[in-house]
Image 1 (cartoon, rainbow, N blue to C red):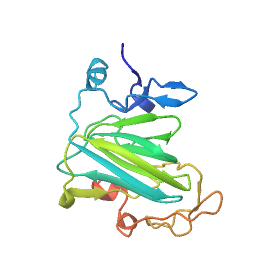
Image 2 (spheres, helix red, strand yellow):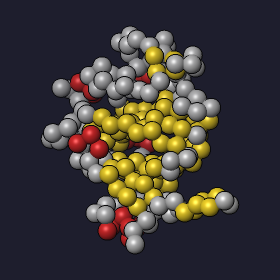
Image 3 (tube, helix red, strand yellow):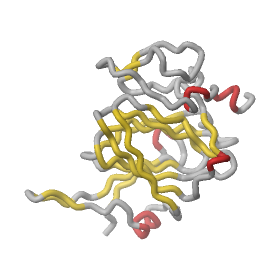
Image 4 (cartoon, rainbow, N blue to C red):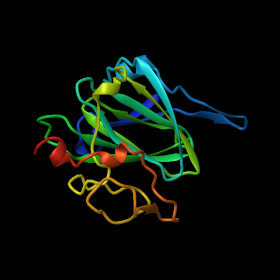
Length: 202
């Protein structure tokens, strides 16, 4: 019997999926399978993952929106500590939902996994004091192939959970914070990304 439940095509974006594993719990704690290739194949999800990554962030850290230009990666994302708002943006040429996004709240408690196919930009916002996120990739990371899009691009219109602030024409986090006053923190690289129209000459 399959140990996963799959919600397909989130926000009507083909290929984006939410995976919920069966959790076996009692007074001692719980157990679940975080990955089972047989269950994935039976669900029509044919991915061969080759790399596992783990990322820790403090509250207010926003990473993204990242993608690889010539070596795109599918990702299976889950949180093992804390809470995160995880976002994927469809960048597939010819897709009827090009430029559309979907976000999911992932926590260590809900044990949900976000399946992001190739051809998407990915980013996330740490909502808890600390968070740890793990994700599988179906291709290796190529440092010289990395690209990105501004996380706050008005043309994407992403409504980031708990963020308040006003767009000032750049990807800088200056002037943004969480609702509790925690400032938004981005890397210097992520503050330099341009909007989707400029990135793709639309």
